[in-house]
Length: 259
Length: 256
Ligand SMILES: Nc1ncnc2c1ncn2[C@@H]1O[C@H](COP(=O)(O)OP(=O)(O)O)[C@@H](O)[C@H]1O
Ligand SMILES: [Mg+2]
Image (cartoon, rainbow over all chains, first blue to last red; front, side):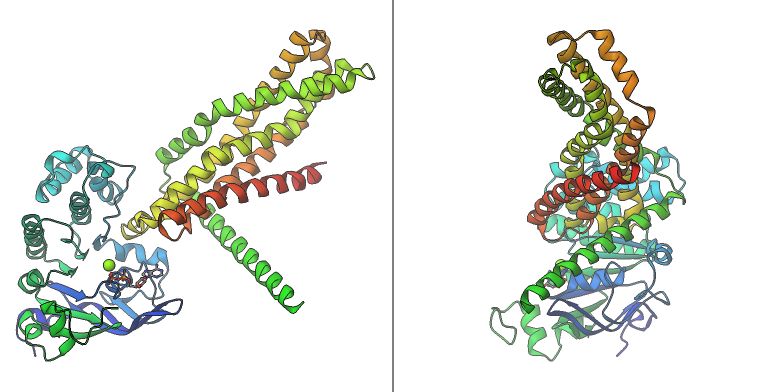
C-alpha cells in the first residue's frame, strides 16, 4: 500500500480505539488514526461529524472515554495537565473560530506565545510577528483589535499565532472556510510551505476536496465516529465505497442521509 | 413523598458537587501562588479593575448609607435624648457591618459579574482552550490574579467605605441636625475599638475571595454560547450575594 515516502514514515500522532460521548451522543466510536511524520494529513468528513473533537483529543483539550492517544511516543490520554505542558509546546493550533484573545490587538496575539515561551527581546519578537503577519497578508493590521476584523482575517491572525513558535506539529481546523478563493489558495500554499520549510507535521481539517487532494499527502475520511477511508489522494479518489464517493463528489443523493 | 426526597437528594448532590468544584478551583489557584511565573502585570490590572474602578460607586453608596443611618438613628435616639450617640452608632454599624457588606455587594455587581462574563466569553469562544494549547495554565493566568486582587482590594475599599460612611453621618448629624461636632467625634472614639475596624476588614477580605472566586468559577464552567454567558453572569451575582450575606452572619458569630 505504501506508494510514497510519506506513507511509510512512522506515525507521530496515533489514536487507538478512541471513544468519546457527550451525554447520549456517541461522537467518536472506536476511532483509529495514525498520522505520518513530516507530512500533510487532511481529515475530511461531515459537519458535526466530530472532526474538531478529534483534533481536540490530539492536543489533550479533550480526554477520551476509552482508548489511547499517543503523541511522539507519549500516551497523553490520562496524562496530567502539568506533564502535558512540554508536549503541548511542540504544537501549534488554529481553532475553527480562531479563538483570538479579544482583549489584545493582532500584534499582541501573535506575540503572545513568543513572549511566554522564548527569552527573545521585544525587538526580535516584533520582527517575527511582522514576518508572520506578512505571510498571511496582514502586515498593516497589527494594531487592530480582533473585533475590528472580518472572520477570514481573524482566521489568518489565528494562523500567524499558531505558527509563531515554528511548531513541529500544526493542527488546522478548517483554515480556509470563510475565505475568498484567492486567499484560500494562499493559505493552502502557506500550509505546504510551513510543512516543507520547518519539516513540520500538519493535520488539516478541510471541506475543500480539490484543495485537500492537491495539498494533502494523506487523506482520512471520518464518518460515523470512525476513519472509514485513508490513503493518498489518488487512492481516495478511487476508493470503492459509496459513502466516500458521495462525499468527495458532493452529491445530495446516496448512502449519507441529510436529515 | 419519595419523589420529594429524591429531588431533595438531587439538589443536595448538586450543591455538594458544585462546592467541590469551587474548592478544587481555589486549591489549584492557591497552588500557583507559590510557583512562578508570577503575573504581576495581570495582577495590577485586576487590582485596578476590581479596586480603583470601584472607588466611585463604593464612595457614593457609603456616603448615602452613612447619611441615612444618621437620620434614622437621630429620630430614634431623640426619644430618649441620646442624640450624641448618633456618631458612634453610625461608625459602629459602618465598620462592623455595612462597610464590608455594601462594598462587597457593590463590587459583586460591578466586577464579579464582569469577571464571570469575561471568562465565560473566553470559555465559549475557545480562548481558554487556546491558552491551554499554548501551554499556559488558564487557572494561573486568569483565576489567580483576580482572586488575589479581590482579597487585597476589598479591605482597602471597605476602609474607604467606613470613612465615607462616617463622613456622611457627620454631615447629616452635625451640619444638618445640629449635634455638637466635638461630642459627635468623642463618642466615636469612646465606643469604636480598633478590633471593630479590623474585624470588618477581615470580613471584607473573605468577601473579596468569595466574589472573585464565584465569578471565576461561573465563568470557567460556562457552556452554551452567548446565552450561557448571560446565565453564568446572573448566577455569579446571585450566588456571590447569597454567600456574602451568609458568611457575614457566620463570620460575625465567629468573631463575637
Ligand atoms: N464540548 C462539547 N460538549 C458537548 N457536545 C459537543 C462538544 N463538542 C462537540 N460536541 C458535539 O460533538 C459533535 C461533533 O462536533 P464537532 O467535532 O465540532 O464537529 P465537526 O466535525 O463539524 O468539527 C457535535 O454534535 C457537537 O454537538
Ligand atoms: Mg469543527
